[in-house]
Amino acid sequence: MSSIINALTDLVKSLLEVVWSFFTTAGELVQKTLQFALSFATGILNLVIDFFRGLVDLAGGLVSFILGKFCARRRVGKTLWAFFPFCTRLVKKKKVG
Image 1 (cartoon, one colour):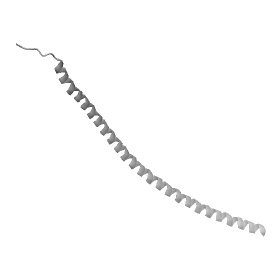
Image 2 (image 1 turned 120 degrees about the horizontal axis):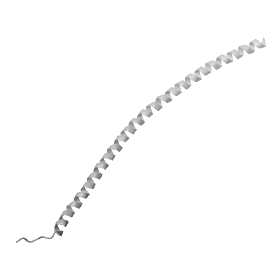
Image 3 (image 1 turned 180 degrees about the vertical axis):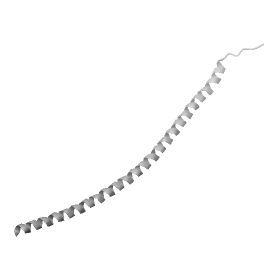
Image 4 (image 1 turned 45 degrees about the vertical axis):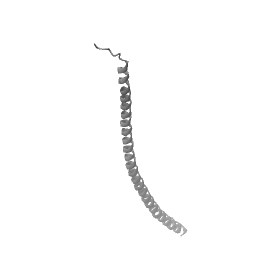
């Protein structure tokens, strides 16, 4: 008789363990799904932020490139502007007549 009672208690324990593991698995599944959704949303947000940060960096690079070219050409222009009158003063003027 005691073996029948032990068998029935083992059966009940096994059934309760199966039900408990079902709920535990379902809870973990919900947790992992929410974690995935959150990481997916933050990934998309980071993608958009990095995209616009890249656009700003690109625009800044283009502006610095254009300003650098402008400053270099201005420097060359000022140098030539000062050099040409200097050259004309060095040339000896000949008197005609």
